[in-house]
Image 1 (cartoon, rainbow, N blue to C red):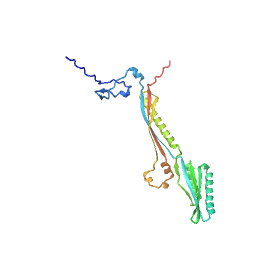
Image 2 (cartoon, rainbow, N blue to C red):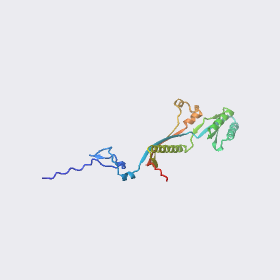
Image 3 (tube, one colour):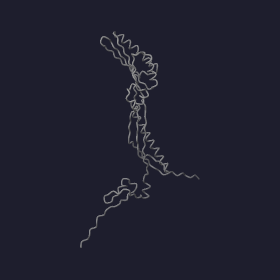
Length: 260
């Protein structure tokens, strides 16, 4: 009479401490995962396990353009070359002197000249590019030049832009504000449940993006030159958004010491 073989052992439940997150929901029964079975850890493990709070934070910041450029064009066509040069240079000197009197620095003024023959005449054209950091002063100077100069002087609409590095600074600011928002959220959660917020264990920026402001749909069909200054500033405004994820250590509420 042969002995009957003992059937192989099968694992139905594996006791996993709560602190072991990687195996918490990996309880096997006949090769099938059995989620939802949780067992308490020992008192020693409970003391060493780190309690954490996980929060996310978002922020959106914006910055308008900090520079504007205006081009003033002066031209003249004469049969005599000297007369064409004299006509342009006379108005050019008046423009540059007016800019200096209004407080525009020389490094913010760029002058280019072009002289050529057109059929039986001579044509001279000069362009003054002015960079402004104060938009109110820009408007006052443009209005002054329009009033004082004749129709042969053409002043282009202002072009607004951002200095190099301003987008990166805005991106950084959005991240810092998002981290601050997440920290405040974690602190409020801990206060609500009677705990103390500890040190940060993880700070991760999950998403960042930036975009340029858009004007209203009914205005988008207009020519750029017909937009007001405020509409131009709004359309050149840059927005940046950041989303972060933070993990903080959670401590028990500190007990106040009794004074004798």
